[in-house]
Length: 188
Image 1 (cartoon, helix red, strand yellow):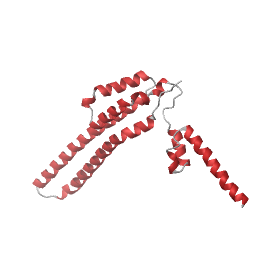
Image 2 (cartoon, rainbow, N blue to C red; image 1 turned 60 degrees about the vertical axis):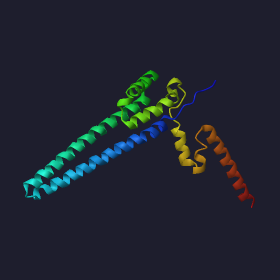
Image 3 (cartoon, rainbow, N blue to C red; image 1 turned 90 degrees about the vertical axis):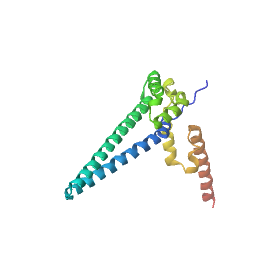
Image 4 (cartoon, rainbow, N blue to C red; image 1 turned 45 degrees about the horizontal axis):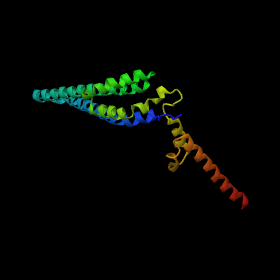
């Protein structure tokens, strides 16, 4: 029986979400800086005696608040798309997952650029990432094994041991090396 290949959904999501998270963090920084600018201007406002300067500063505050609203709107939109993308993999039924994916794929022209790249990359490997829905014995992720290997093995062996077969081989070789070292100590 030939089994299909299952890609790790955790790593797919991690690799594809990094670009979106960068944009979200950038918007959060812009919102924070505009809040700080508004506070600085508000703190200085009572000390100005001229009405013209007060009006200019109030206009600056209004502009900053408009920018802040615009950033909040973009941020809300990106967080919504982030949630919609993760819901593709959280579905219990394969039909629902495909339906959610197709909805995003059909609306590709109206999506932000980071979301479109995610959808286009996912389209290439969608079947490989959702094979765990077709076969009950497929794990959704190999992350548990990789976490174990990441903490227990040195850097040069981590790539080799991403599968059970590689891990078994590494453990056997480690036992052989251990016995060789200890035999030399006992004999001398």
